[in-house]
Length: 143
Figure (cartoon, rainbow, N blue to C red):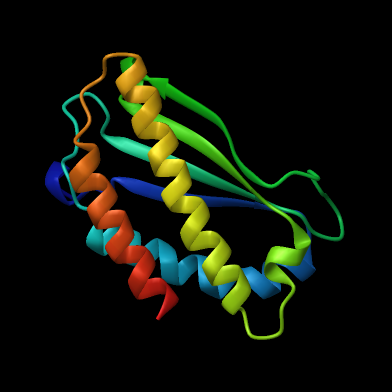
């Protein structure tokens, strides 16, 4: 894989149980694929990867939180991270639409938080292009 085709936004998942995995896995894979296709960058000379980690409450493990936390930049390693906490009620709907909406909004919020962190630390990041591409992926994901 060439440097230009490397995935810029990764979407990992720390899932708190089989129940949560079964309800969310296909949706996460679909959004991961859209982010990889639509968010090709480069968006920064410094940040080569934005690693988003979903922390999904389930029957075995639950964080009891909701939203974006833990935003960090590691300039030396050329990446940024953010945790997205997903409560049970966000994925437990019958059709998955509630989870898709939650996930799309949360990923956009995480990207905005990463951009704010980069700006605050004087790190170059083309937030406008990044926001546009993430919004396009999120829109496709919700259709």
